[in-house]
Image (cartoon, rainbow, N blue to C red; front, side, top):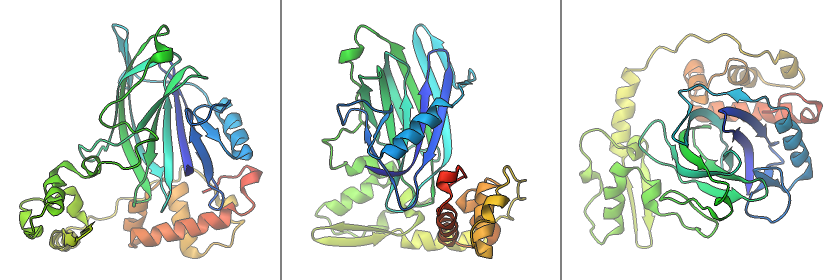
Length: 328
């Protein structure tokens, strides 16, 4: 598969955690395979099909310091370990994905792995494999979002079992293997919208919009088009218009701009950035704002912010990556 960015966490029994983030160039995405897809040595938890990226990953991961987790994120009782984490703002790009991977401790066998949307009760589909060469289970999450960033919460339980590790497997209702080419729509649609989709797929031709009452569901945030072999329907439009209208009246005052967390002015001076590109990428990289926050601060649409950001990133990345400067 091709990815634009990777986030890798390696967990140990003593509650220490190593975290590494890696980003590919806009014109040279990361070509990777999961640990169980190829039978050859690899840089856990991925096979890198590009030797340069493999070297970058191995050198970067080797330099990662082990961080000690707080008791609220890691604990053990009666031989059962529990790990909890929340990730916000993983960068995502159109028509591509970012990938998160959690490496469990050596010989650890997962008992439960839950990837969820922190903004709803939706559970994400994941892949869980046993990496025999490195004696670790790996949980993968493919991160996609139209907003330019992806959030998730992870809860995992596991135990140590050296005797049965070689034959151990993990599977639940939200795990997917290579053979699962078609994902059930039940797993992709918010629970409160399932009746609408089921009704659309049935022979019943009753208008879908009449089914909604009260607070719009997650799918109603924007108009949704459903397409079948013999039917096309759009629903959620009136709810969207109503929400947009009311939202315009209750728009909050933009919060105060946080102080700079980093200073990349020297890097920004190396590229012919427009005034708006410079403003957007500074807010993102130096002030740590998300795309939605930048849009609110500059009174622009998220799409426009996204375009300015990646136009600036492309200019900065030209000839800068190999010099060790921060890419996009």
